Each structure stands twice: as C-alpha cells, then as structure tokens.
Length: 199
Image (cartoon, rainbow, N blue to C red; front, side, top):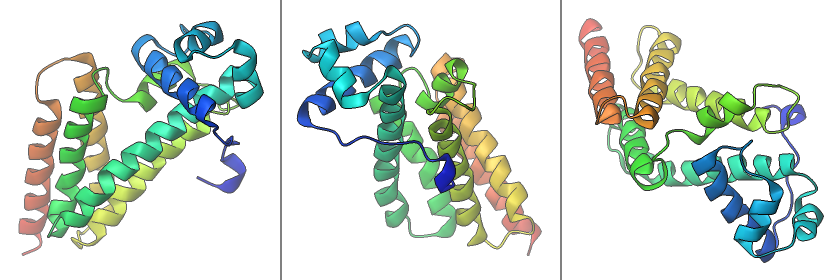
C-alpha cells in the first residue's frame, strides 16, 4: 500500500483497546453498518464520549478493527512460513494457516471480504485497509512462487490467490465443509503440475 493511501491510525490506550476488542467482535458477528457507537461503548464499558475522544469517529474504529485483524493475521502466518522447509511447503503453509485461523477466528469467513460488502467507496478510510490487505496477499503469493521458478510466476500467483480467496468465501458461506483443505489440495496439484511441466 502506498503511503498516500495508508489511512491514519490512532495510539491505543488500554480503554481504547477494550473498545476496539468489543467493536471487533460486534463488527465481525453483526456487520459494520448494523453496529452503532452506543452498542460498542456499552459492550466495552466506556462512555460514547470516550470512544469519540479516542477514535474521533466510527469510521476510525472500523479502520482500527480491520488493520488490527490484518496485523494479527500476518503475525499468525509468519512463523508458519518460517517453519516450512521447502518453497512448495511455504505456499501450502498459507492455506494451512488460513484453515487454522478460520477455525479459531473466522466462523463468518474473511473479515476483509465481509467489510468490502459494506464498504465499497474508495473514499472511505477503511477501503485502503481492505484493498491493501488483498494486495499484500497477492504480493505474498507472488514472492513465494518465485522461489519455485515457474514459467509464469504472475499467472501462478494469481491462480493461487483465486483458490485461496474462493476458499475463504466458501468457508464463510458454509457452502461445503473443508473448503480450505480442498483449495490446498488443488494448489498442491497445481504446483506439482507446474514443476512436472518444466522437467
């Protein structure tokens, strides 16, 4: 994400962190538009004035919620990538991490995809967080596949991204069980076919 598109962030006090945790639970479970500042304040045990003093607006709370979720996901993923012993294993580790993340934090699917369903205006400050997170994921897949030296790294990375994002949506909609495991196996087959094709 370029600096000019990076949304403003706020310094979080302990009370603001409690409010952000409450907002995160509510936004994820009920949707951003359905949750008002009054409910967040009540859930966090703070006054509405405190929320506005700390964040300035509901829009900023949304920015902090999505940015926090993205930061936690990256921190969750990093050691799994580091522990993978092969280039192919690092690609597949993304799918494994997503499956484990969804089991622990994602019963309703991807928070970024869900937020984009409600926030599609590029002028909204949270829009850059949403699109920036997905751009980062594509960049990650691109970097990971380069180590495999495929014939068309950009195309392979985009295909892996589509498998990954489609699995997140299928998981959130509960279309069928094991969506991320299925996507992982399709990714493994894709990587194996690419390797075989270059022998």
